[in-house]
Image 1 (cartoon, rainbow, N blue to C red):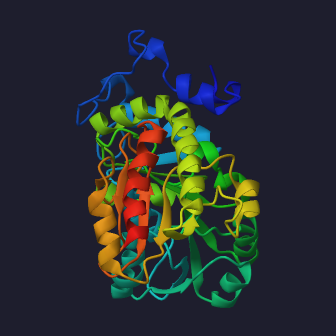
Image 2 (cartoon, rainbow, N blue to C red; image 1 turned 180 degrees about the vertical axis):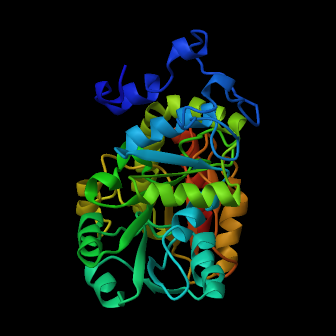
Amino acid sequence: MEPNEFLNDSDIITHLADEYSSHNDAVVPPVYMNSLHVIPKEAMDDGKPRPFVYGRNSNPTVSIFERKIAALERAGRALAFASGMGAISAAILANVKSGDHVVAVETSYGPAKFFLENQLGKFGVETSFVTGDDVSQFEKAIRKNTTLIYLESPSTMVFKLQDIRKVAALAKERGIVTAIDNSWATPVYQKPITMGVDLSIHTVSKYIGGHSDIIAGVVAGNAPLMDKVHQVREFYGGILGPMEAWLAIRGLRTLKVRLKAHAETAMYIASNLEAHPAVSRVHYPGLKSHPQHELAKSQMEGFTSPLSFELNCMSNPAQTRLFVRRLKWFGMGPSWGGFESLVSVPGKDSTMVRIHTGLEDKETLWNDLKSSLDLVVQG
């Protein structure tokens, strides 16, 4: 079957690029662990490029995963990386040079923000940060030498959104490349390429992998930008390993099913948190109370799980840490998107808590949170 025969995400995930006849009719594609592919001697002089020659450039198992992601994102091509930051940094590096300027969302993922602010600065690239909830902020921040606008919607910790269509249209008017971290919504719930964004990035370690057992990233987009991203990956050596690619394919198979469960639990938890007297505010785009809820519905087909909330404990960070310590079902960890529920606090002086609701029973998770929240109210 050709890619255009796959009309929906479920079919793409289940069958696109598997091509059983190419792998001895195996329903699960094999892991190609080889570092190189020999070239048939009769093809030495035909001048035709070979799809697989050396593992730093391409790999059959990795290619299957990339083709599925490209189709899900409605992009011409996808490239997999050894980590989410590998994907983020490659997408950025492919579109800047010394003397250029970047506009980015200030609540972006911490390491990505550090890379923009510090690593790029070493090479003469400046970055301006904006809150991003109004397109006019991007317009005001753009300079003559701006070559890239970096988005993350919803963004880390506070889950602010950017109007993707408006920012992409503004960028195209000015000849500026746009890139977005699309990890929270996944390519199932949000397709930035269809809204005019040039590059869509995912930390595969999160929902796409889904089992907390791989570190990986992926970038999707169209030529010629993806050719530039490929050059960065090839020469920096950041390609995803074949075993990790095989695990990413496995995780992708159940992505839609898992997202429904995560989303149902997250909405249940967010609604209950909003009604609890120990909570002053919940940051979750799925709630009607979120200031950008209507924008969220216009850009996304669903809502995933990470959310944050602020405790009404008179700005007492110690009380926040005590609340976290009392939780039994939420492990303390910096990531999300796996089967397990997690909690994190952005800093020792914070009264904000971020949680990822895993695949445990939603009543179990709420009772755990409520037990600790009730003690916050009691003081």
